[in-house]
Image (cartoon, rainbow over all chains, first blue to last red; front, side):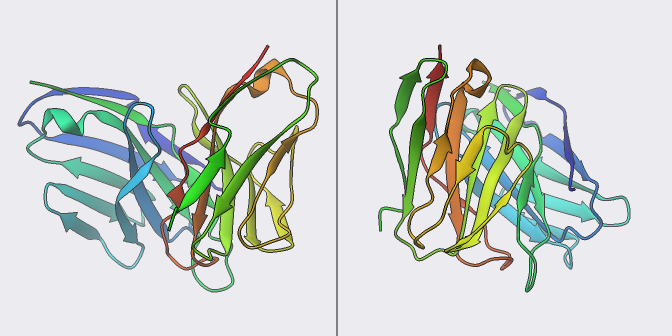
Length: 115
Length: 114
């Protein structure tokens, strides 16, 4: 089955710096890669997602890149702010007609943005 | 829409007790799933369902049962609770099986087994 590895487990940056979180997946059939942000004591919430037919997607200060050949994808946060401090999870699934869409998560990255 | 509703929010059980965690969604979503979250382990898939009457195992199904008699509800049952099942449990749903749709999560249930 699918396995998703996420690194680093913790990341500390100064406010205004960039943060990068990397994930690798094992199942070459995976074609949908969402990223979730979880604040302390709250539910995970989607921040950005990408399909395998797209190499990069950007939404304001957040971007995700995908390398299908190497089977890895990354989250990039620019101009970090203290409110970006949270746990971030990557995930992978084999989505589309006839597939279950079962979503497998990485282990999570705790991001701390220091003022 | 209330979204995904989980009850209870907190529960303490003794080893060997049984319990059902409730999950309901009012968005007519086909796909529903249960995850457990433990420190350093991320979100691990317990069971999932692609529609009423259809369920399947995830990564860590042992010790848990599920059923899906209606589109709206997807309860998770612990038949004989063990301390290793102490965790935060999240239910999630998405519109259609395999439709490139993100899953929406409930607020979670914090479960402690003594």
